[in-house]
Image (cartoon, rainbow, N blue to C red; front, side, top):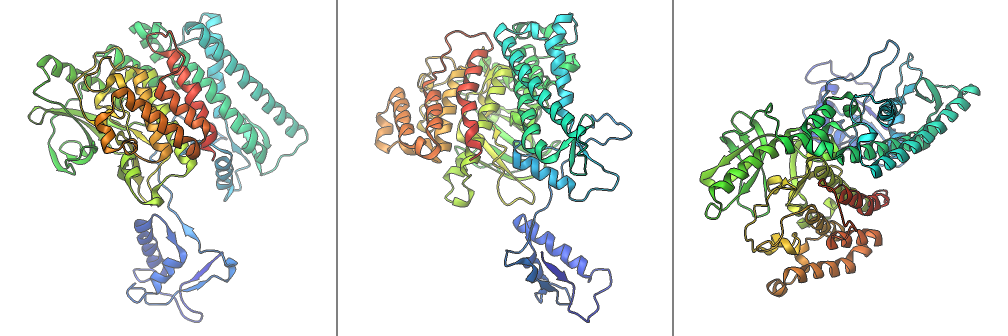
Length: 589
């Protein structure tokens, strides 16, 4: 504890106004927050005591109650803009929806409970957590609607047989968790252990500590697993791949919204059927100011564009000497579809920015996508720039790097699974992190997947041109280097992801493991072997054996999938189980 007095004992403080203690301490708090992202009490008081501060008295700082600990450090809350409320109001209930910047954990749940209970009002008798129970109702409807023949959205009967088994298993696990929770609730209620330190599920109460450490987390994991199984199965449904009417019916169903299917279905509709109801997003590019400069690995730029305001622009250049008119028309069609896909509202775990418009500048032989900057962001940096930086303070912790890889992998999988498009540009210069107001560091928990200028439908024709650039080829599968001998596939995206795993694990650029002499002599397949050999030397000692094995599996594109459906469902499942699931233990490090 620390105490701060406006002036010494026996003196009178200034009256409220521009010279008051309150006015000056708020001013100095803001100065410290703007400069550092935080404010230390000792620094604020020292600033007030300085003769140039404008404060005409000397504040007194009592630290004797601090037991020798460091001075208190204050950080500002990031205001979250209110979204359209979907709360069902009841006379005796108030439901809070808390958006998190990180995955749910025991420590986070405990901190949230402590925060909510810090200053409770007398009329608040308990806190309510009801999302889990509400969501199970919709999962139950999905699993059992098919038996009743109800036509109210996707049902378990419409998805492939293997996916039906996985959904049924996940649902059974969730029911066991709910039954266990019900038993705990009944036990707590029967012994009449109700106090102010309780949580509520559907009106019943259980001890807060037990809920925080066991029940809530277990239910959250069970619910997410069941929802993921449903999403995976529905997007693998052949009917939703080829039948526009069936896809639209699924989109219109309330069940799809409640189970988190809408973002997937929307992207599928746009990428496969290009709804005519959506207006064109093409615009004229008229920048008022720009930060654009020529740099090979810099693809995002801040601009102020007339009619759009402050935006982030991503450019895609092409060679006008080699691109024919029909290819140019195809590219424009893809840019239109891509912009619509990126404009579709998506959850945060898609890790993509919201697209506003796109443009074509034929005189400069380039396309551009205009994105809305993330709310509250002040700056951004690419993963490549972050790795190249010599500032050790900016290097993410081990657990953060595991989380970073998993977030990027999950975003890529959602892109593949929903729109059935390949990215074609997975590389460290296409992964970005943002810094937010009142924050000293970049937010490593929320990487943004960019570089969509090369993205296209999985079944579409690649815009293949001869590329002889070592720094770019090092991210590409051997069959996609130089003059490509294969169309780009999802497996090729996963190969590039393996290279990205190497860079994040070794915290170095992949090009640095090649000498200048070897770059001239290496064939594409020798380059692949060299990367795998280097991974075996360095990844295990930095990230562990499981991480090394996952990276090499991606570099080998060995996912043991011999036959697949048009959506690549089996490949997606294999990538999720063999790669992404194996990363979860590392996130807790």
